Image (cartoon, rainbow, N blue to C red; front, side, top):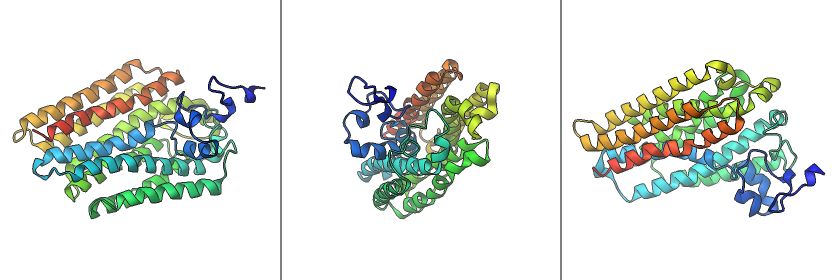
Length: 326
């Protein structure tokens, strides 16, 4: 019957997660036994890894641009290590999120096909998989300097708290932003060996960016969330959503400009600052485009715009990294 229908690749429709990317390698290439675990890690939806990674690259690129005399080959490993770590920690965090939310996910149409509520795997196996990913990420973190290691370990606190935020606050996206943008602090410290004001400004900018894109994402589930008793900014803002999103986009942009001003000193590094500012301007333009095209009642539109934030987040990198060579 319906659950036995096959897609063109010969895969059972019941074997896919409902909001997975069409044609995902997990659905077509991964061994059957591994698919529940890869889906717990969202390997079939790489956008989350990008959104965790990009603030890391912001922090590292701006740190390099702030003091060109400290650029070294080790920075190439920091770039790569952050990428590997983002994939692993996003996977561990999503696995933890699914363990905590397994009962709620069963009440939401978009998430009830995930491995735990659908019975494709068990909580003990999911816990083991989470620990394996976290330990692999720790091995990468330990190759960085002491300041970055400490900052990385502290990040486990917001990661652990986030899945429960939607139960007690209308603002769970703030907790997601606190967790997802930690890399701006970590990567800055991995390059400089210390904490810096530009990194904090980037971090807060990223939190407002997360409020922007994850509110768009949350509009897919407002009806189911209301029935399940789950809170979100999408439900809180209602018809005022676009005004709030405009506010978040503006604050994210302003704080990012402030980070560039503090890091690059427009008087001392005018060309580098101009290049960095161009990347930020493109970032702001992308967020404005998302606002113009957003249809909150259209779940496919919301998902498409949410995923487009990979491109938005790459634009500051495209400004900060060249600025390091001026």
